[in-house]
Figure 1 (cartoon, helix red, strand yellow):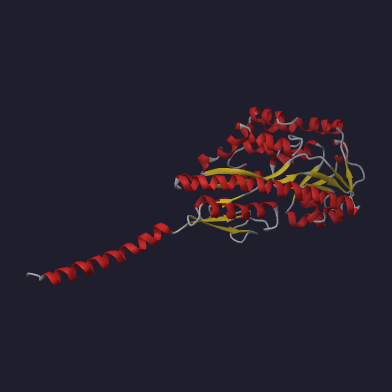
Figure 2 (tube, rainbow, N blue to C red):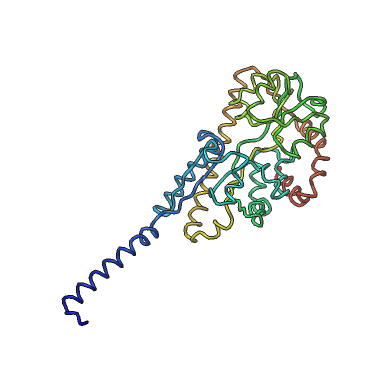
Length: 337
């Protein structure tokens, strides 16, 4: 069958329209931003919550139209027990669990739970900035996770319902609430105290009723949870950090376009600086509020007092040295000035 010139032009035009219509979804798809779900378990107003929101702001500013960062606070998507599984399955892209949550992936991160390892948050920062400290971020890639940053909550202080809290012997025989951590359990056993694993939400009542005698936490947590109202003494021990690691799925991260990965890395670095300052300022402000409230005495410790605590904790360091590595422990101690 022969077609006239007019007919051929009509068939060609129809085909072009059809092909164009087919191409449209692919063009639209190519321009769609990469959706990044950031799930965490605390409120927006916390240092972690503020850092996550700052990351969203910076990432979308650096990569306009390329990424859509969606932050889900307060366990809206996943709680503590499920968030690691969620990121490994690709249900979310970013999470920021407590460092103590990673001990089933690597024992090396237990260095941060070792008591009296760091003098203060500045020493912690110095260690985390060293090559060894940075190497811990990639210590779980063989398990499918890559760390992007350390986020601070604050340094822990020790409190009890007793009048005196200066030396290790002052806690002998007392009951202390702890997070689920082998290191923290060993810490109190080494002091002759009795560690009690307990949900965070139950601590105030347990302190109030005497189910436990004491606890360890950051100034901001002590103030926000009103622990200072049911404790007599808070020793300024700074004996360990409550820190988080922002992690993502290693395969997903490696598969990102280079420019996107670069932009997200830069946004994360800036959000980390911002969030860690929020954490520091909040803890300083809440420490002052606790002092002003006058309900719990803040006990300052001398260098000799701290040395006594550190000496009492050396058996705990030795107990976990095999899994952590002596090189990491030495590098952490070297960060103290």
